[in-house]
Amino acid sequence: MGLSGDRPAPVGIDALLETVRAGLDRVTPEGAAAAAGRGALLVDIRYAELRDRDGLIPGALVVERNELEWRLDPFGSHRLPEAVGHDVEVVVVCNEGYASSLAAESLRRLGLHRTTDLDGGFQAWRAAGLPVTPPAA
Image (cartoon, rainbow, N blue to C red; front, side, top):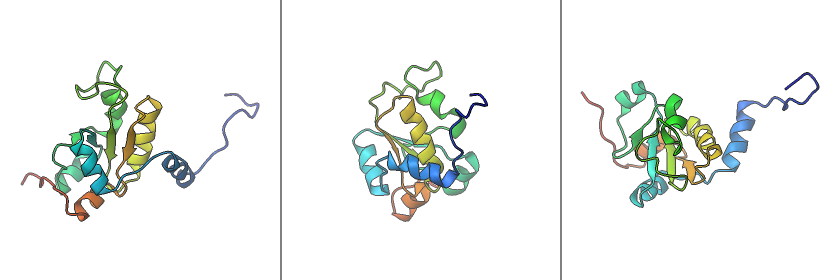
């Protein structure tokens, strides 16, 4: 991009988040649990300190945010065994449902068209009384 004005106009994070979320069919905690029940991958992108503090969603894949695209790209050399194709249903989970929206959009740009995120994140999951594996003592 040069100086000729072909750069996209700057946008704030709130506007970007609103735009990204408009393209996602975000799920509730109960919707995420139902998705997992039909074989969707719940992918926890929270950093270790939060997982150690609050626990884990049983059965969720833990993939740190900085590795997410490499681990879930079905064409990638560093993909997880669960990353079997672009039709895999993925629900991204962060702590409160903000970073997960941006991460879900990034996965959709890789072609993982059935990706969304958990509205409210792990905290909403826990508040809904859904199962949580407590942190190790």
